[in-house]
Amino acid sequence: MKKINIIIPAYNEEESLPFLYERLTKLINSIENYEFEILFVNDGSKDKTLELIKDYRKKDNRISYVNLSRNFGKEIAMIAGLDYAKGDAVIFMDADLQDSPELLPELIKYWEEGYDDVYAKRRTRDGETFFKKFTSKMYYKLLQKLTNIEIQKDTGDFRLLDKRCVNAIKKLRESQRCSKSIFSWIGYKKKEVLFDREARVAGKTKWNYKKLVDLAIDGITSFTTSPLRISTYISMPTFLTLFIYFIYVIVKSFAINEPIQAFQAIILINLFFFGIIILLIGIIGEYLGRIFNETKNRPLYFVDEYNDTKETNE
Ligand code: UDP
Ligand code: MG
Image (cartoon, rainbow, N blue to C red; front, side, top):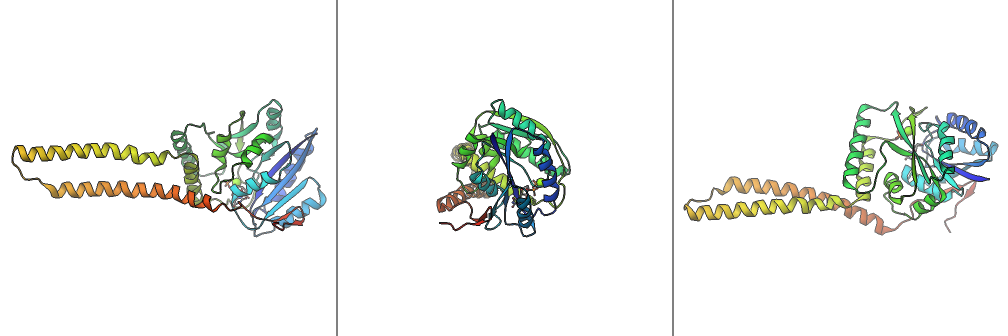
C-alpha cells in the first residue's frame, strides 16, 4: 500500500485544528487503498496547538508531529516536514482549512497518472482583501518577467509531491527559502488542478504586509540575479548619453566661444547618479545579505520533539 504524508505547518492554530482534524480525517477515511500519515509541524506555537496535536495522536495513530524548538516561519516548517516525511508522496496543506481537503482525491488521481507535482491553483480567493489579491498578481507578473523558469500563477503551497520531488527539494538547503520558486526550479512533470480557496476557518492570518514584502524580495533574489544586471542596463546608456553631452558642451564652448553654464547641469547629474547609486547599493546589499546568511551554513531548524521523543541533537 502506498503511503502519503500530509504535512501541515501550524503556528498558533488552536482555533482551527479541531475543524481541520474533523474534516480531514473524515475525508481520508473515505479514501481507500492508501495509508495516510498526517504530519503536523508545530512551528513554535504559543497556544495549545501542540497539546491538541498530542491529544489527536493518542487516539489516532495516523497522526505524527515534529515540534520545532521555536517559531521558524512557514517556509522552514515545510522543509522540516519534508525531512520527516517517509511516504511515497507528500501533500502540503495549511492548518486553517483554506486548502480544501476535498481536493485530495483529485491530487492523488493525477499522481497515479504519472504526474510528480500536482498543484492546486486558486480559481477564487475568499476572505482576502482586494489589495492582497492585486499585489500578489503584480508580484507574479514581475517574478515571471525576471526569470526564465515558468512560475505557476495563483498557486500556493497546496500540492502533492512525488517522493522524487521531495528528495530533490531536500537537497536545496538554502536558509532564505521561497518554496514557490523551489517548486518551479526543480522541474518534473507538473499538473494543475483548480480549486476555490476558502476563507480561514478560525483564528487570524499570520501574514502581514511586512512578511509579504520580505517573501517577495526573497522570492526574487533567490530565483534570479537579474536585478544585479540592472546596473549594466542603467549605467551603459547613461554613461553614453553623458559622454555625448560632455563632448557636445566642450565642442560648443570652443566653437562659439561661449562659457559653460555648469551649475544646473552639475546639480542634475549629481542627483541622477546618486539616485542610481543608492538603488544599486540596495540591490547589491540584498544579495550580499543572502551570501552572508548562506555562508553561516547553519542547520535550517532545530527540533524539540518528534512523536513524543525528545530530540538530543547528537
Ligand atoms: N504558519 C507557520 N509558521 C508561521 C506562520 C504560519 O507554520 O510562522 C502556518 C499557519 O499555521 C498555516 C499556514 O502556515 O497553517 C498558512 O498561514 P496563514 O493562514 O497565516 O497564511 P495565509 O493563508 O493568510 O497566507
Ligand atoms: Mg491561511
